[in-house]
Length: 377
Image 1 (cartoon, helix red, strand yellow):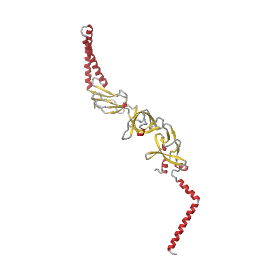
Image 2 (cartoon, helix red, strand yellow):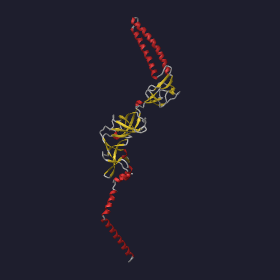
Image 3 (cartoon, helix red, strand yellow):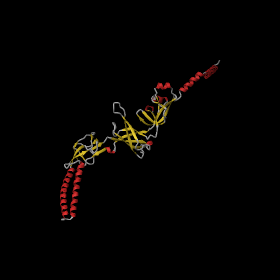
Image 4 (cartoon, helix red, strand yellow):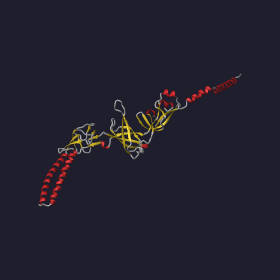
C-alpha cells in the first residue's frame, strides 16, 4: 500500500469515529438533561436559595410610605437679618477701655467699650449755653405775660417771649438727646453698648487705638435662631412653597451618639432660576441646636403636602451606579437590577418615590456580590 493510500484510510477512520460519538451523544437523554441544566444555571439573573444563603444576602419587603418628602437638597446655615448687628461709635475718638473679648456672650445694653471723644465736650458746652438761654427765656416770658395780662403791653410781645421760650426748650432737649443716645456725658467720656443680646463675633479695635463713625468696632450675633439657604433643583422649583416644613439630622453630642432632629419652615422661595446652577434659592427659618453654626453646609429634607406616596426600604438596599440609583429586586429565584428615584434618606431608611412597589422584595445586604453577579462592577 502506497503512502498516499495510508493517509486516505486514516482520514476515513477518523470521520467514522467522530460520527459514532455524535450519534451516541444524541441518543443519550441523561447527557442532554445535564447539558440543559448547565445552560439553565448560567442564565443571567438566576439565583438559587443556596446562593442567597452562601452570599449572606438579606431580603426585605418594601414598606408603603403614605406621605413622602419632596427630596433631600443641600443647604447652608446663615443668620437672620436681625441677628447680626454692627456697633459703631457715634463720634470719632479713642478707645480708653475694652470690657469684652471676642466670642463672649453679652446681654442687651451691656457695656462693650469706653471711648474718649472731643465732640461730646462741645455738645456739652452747647447744652450748658442752651440751659442758660432757657432760664433767661423763662424769666422773660413770665414777666411779659404778667404785663400783658395787666394791659400794660400788647399781647404780641408776650407771644414773642413764649415762642423764644419754646425754642430754648427745644435746644436743651436736642443736646440732651444727642448725648443720651451716644452714651456720653459733657466730659467727653462715652460708653458703647450692645444693641442686642448674643455673642461678640468680631472686635476691630484695641485699647488706645482710634475709632471713627465710618467703621464698626464690634459685631454682635444673636444665635437663638438661624436660617437655611436652600438650593432647590429645577424639578422642585414649582413644588416647594412657603409654609412647608424642612427636617435635618445633626450628629448627636451625647455618649450614645444619637442624631438630633431639627425642623423648620420655608419662609420664601426665589421666583427666578439661576442660569449658572439651574437651581432656585429658598430660605427657611430654624431654631438653635447643638452643632449648628453659621456657614455650615448640610442636607435638609423638604416634606411634601401628603399628596404623593412611595415606599421605604433599608438605606443599604440603594446603590449608586453611574449617576443613577438602583435596587436589586429578588423574586422566583431571580435577581434584577431596577432603577429607582431616591427622594430622602433618614437614618437607616431610604424613601423612594418611583421604581418600586410596596411588597416587592429587595436585597438589603450582599449588594457588592450581586453587582459582580450581574457584571456591574
